Length: 184
Image (tube, rainbow, N blue to C red; front, side, top):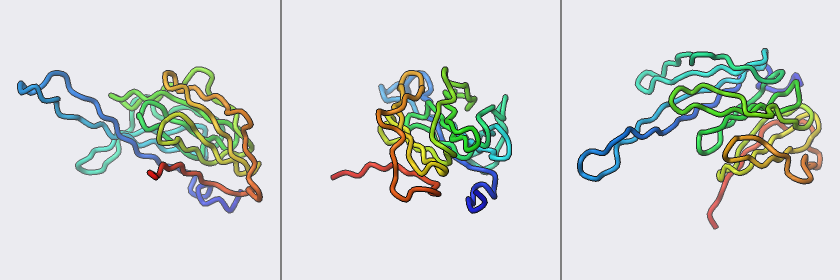
């Protein structure tokens, strides 16, 4: 595990933002302007928590969110947020699972999803959510495979996909995972 650069840093950082429309229109039947809230979530590998911050968009300064840090499994390694900005997922290297949270769009506060944490493979280090928000994937450093989950879009709960985890030939030691959608 010593060769994992993120382990040496002890931190993983994810920045997300949320759109929250103000109520009422502008009198011209046009939609109201969109107001954005920006949040950063940092997995603290040296502990069992994730720090949450608001981001000042003018200065870039971070301010801790009330209630932060939020408890997760052992040795959290990475954080991912679904495309809707409603759910956050944390790969927990030490406990072999994924913590799932709902995100309060107005405050950035994390609330554990019922049933969380969800079992993954050995030493999960990276989590990614596909662009549709229907699936989450976790790369497992120790077992050299990928855990796949369906996401309950109402609650954020994870359910293992049939056949998961999926073996990867010579996959031992890989760390990251990314999911993209490409138009054909």
